[in-house]
Length: 146
Image (cartoon, rainbow, N blue to C red):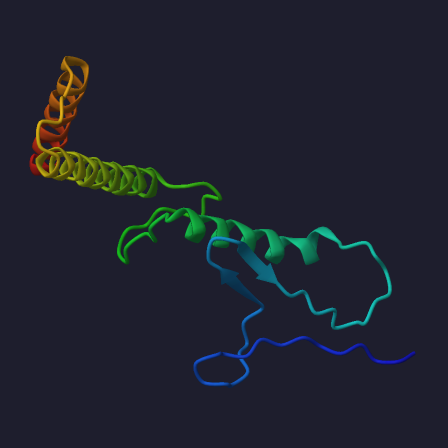
């Protein structure tokens, strides 16, 4: 039987081969290369062979979603799911990103209205902007209290 080639990953920055078996393609997903040391022609993968693949999948998915790593010194156990700390940190980060996006959008609206003389701004738009500013103030107050 002819030997199958083994796939390896090279580090683009150094050009050297790595011992890694996976890599991420941001905004696309991850790639995992499963080299079969036994050159088995079988199409069936055992639970033992799939375990590292799915562990890697979970790690890559967390990275693509922006889930922060647990800081050293915090013992969260070996749960396959997000810890409460990770979920809290992810929600805070997303809230901060949403607040920044809201602030940027409101600033753009103000610039636009300032640039166009006599641009009418209806009561509904005014009320929506005031509501957004009130919500941003509440978010800021909550963030400052931590």
